[in-house]
Image 1: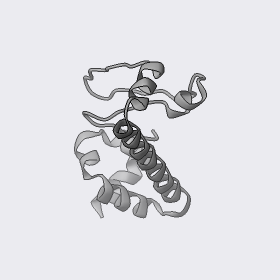
Image 2 (image 1 turned 45 degrees about the horizontal axis):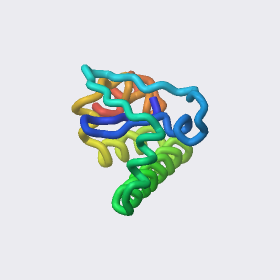
Image 3 (image 1 turned 90 degrees about the horizontal axis):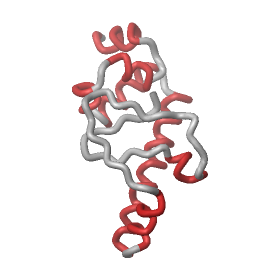
Image 4 (image 1 turned 120 degrees about the vertical axis):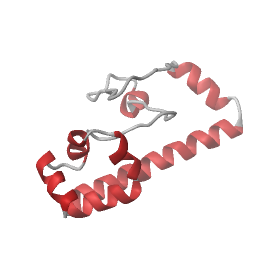
Length: 120
């Protein structure tokens, strides 16, 4: 598990979007979901249709890059307790909507470790 999305979020296999090749990753819905699909060509036409759309897409990309950098730092230098605390602070909604086994996977720990950390 490398990322979560919520109602109204835009989700994509960004590697596939950038390279035009199939992704090694997949997107899995954890709840009943309505998926709306747009082709890359139509999406890029939308982005290119106005400065506002282009700026919005740039903001989305910058936010994704920043989130990925935070996640990599958490995994590489933070203890399991620190990872839990940082994610809980950043995304309390996660713990209300996502089953703990997926959160544990995201935090790179076992479900038992997550349960123990949550009890402390």
